[in-house]
Image (cartoon, rainbow, N blue to C red; front, side):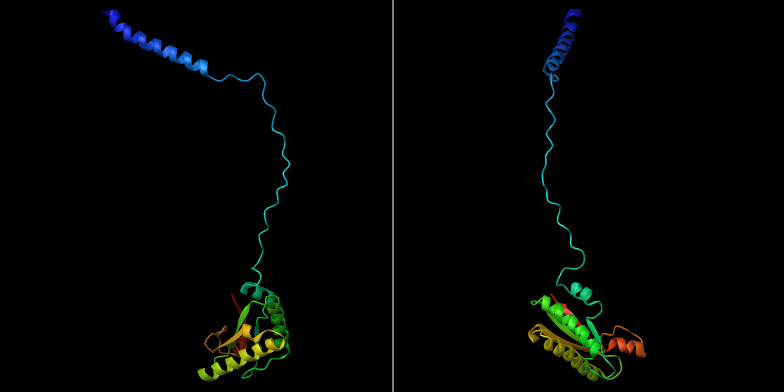
Amino acid sequence: MIRSALKPALQATTLLVASSLALAACSKKAPAELPPPPAPTTTTEAPPPATPQGPAPGSQADFAQQMMGKDTIYFDTDKFNVDADDQAALAQQAQWLAKYPAKKATIEGHADERGTREYNLALGERRANAAKNYLVSLGVDAGRLTTVSYGKERPVALGSDEASWAKNRRAVTVTID
């Protein structure tokens, strides 16, 4: 009886030893000699393309950056004439627009808070048209320019004093994408 109880245990042990030996026989052996290391490669990879710094050329941000504040011209009280300072700013705008002939622009006319809404809308329109006409005289195609008057509706300075009013009497050129 002891013999029959030992027989399955002996068979299991024998099977385990045989399996271990079989697996050990299948293991890889280290080669006698290692292969040579790979030869260094000399590829002439192009450096990654440089990421542009600053605004995209021809964009409104580029226009504003290039103008350095000269995208806006200022007027005296109740006036819409283009003076010497305004002419220099508009000349710089015309040069930029000549560089990007497919670009269109809107000239926004503004007025200070004094006067009626109707009066200031008309004054803003005259200011925008004066800036447009000067740009056209410098060679900018009139078809590329539109005007809009905001009158006193979009002030940049909210004070009720001469300094604030002077900042609000303006024409601003904005490029259209």
